[in-house]
Image (cartoon, rainbow, N blue to C red; front, side, top):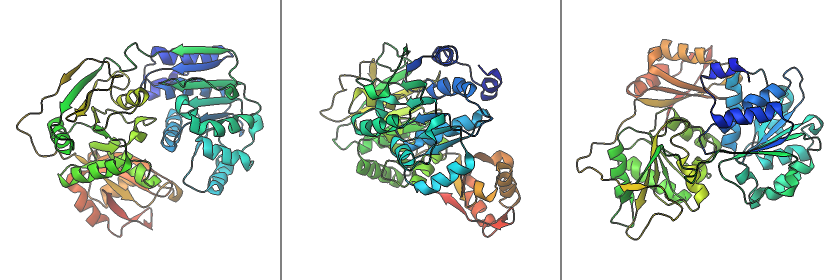
Length: 437
């Protein structure tokens, strides 16, 4: 393994990651990895894979298939942070295929992270040279191989004639691995626990709602949790929006997230939650998979997960790696815990005396310039300190996109920043600065 990269990332490999690396580097076999959500499966396959790819050639050598665009983007960012010298690109729907093709020709990635539908589109248009692709990784393979994806997956694998090694990873099993995946001699690595994939670092609580409409109890529960980060899971998009609106009207700073939002809205919602600008994320199960959001303290099931797999992935958002977390079920008058929830639990008593909704220290601003404008993080910091009157200690996470940038800043200075930077230039270019709400 490349110890320099591991040291740079500041991580210590767990047993699953070490075993996966050993299998990738020192065998010629296909690999199936089963490991709980939050155990570091992205690092498990990427750390050894980057040693098997050639950064000196412009040829595409590996494809990583993922079920959704967030996981594609996130995985590409993980690779970038490794500083391996390999070029990558995320391919996903919601933007023109032609635009992606232009970027593909410019970047010449050695590895791509792609959703099945979008990859098929590129393959059908011959935008990708399949001759040099030797590695296929299917992350969250249980989701990728679900019935709805099967036809797309079969089509992809028929168009990749030279695959030599396959790596499949998931927290939960698909019923079978279809024949068209063509696994050869296979190593199975199963690191799931005996506790239904729920780590014993997670404390399980029930909260009783006397009313069928559980919003009042949700509000009181969130008040009792103070400024801790929490994800509230619901099963329907309209329920997410109804709940989010209620909490906003009650004075909470929240983000909401579901598949009906535009890509930029989804990115902004996740960014505000992950950088601490919004301590509460209200979401469908779309947020239960493939999002590496660190330090989520609480998972709240407003609606019960519909399957055991859904429960595993929801709860996997907390207690990631070696951290601890809590999960809460809000029980209506006639509701009982689902049968698949077998962990010990206790009743959570909401205190009689509650404070007002906690206000996070940070807020998020939008700056209308990004990578395409040759803007760097140092440019952003300089602009906000010189023009916006901030100290560097008052600036948090900076995320530079192609055409714009999100920045976490101290909430108490937000109006002052907007006023001072109005009409100002960054690197000689006039730009827009707005609060992301």
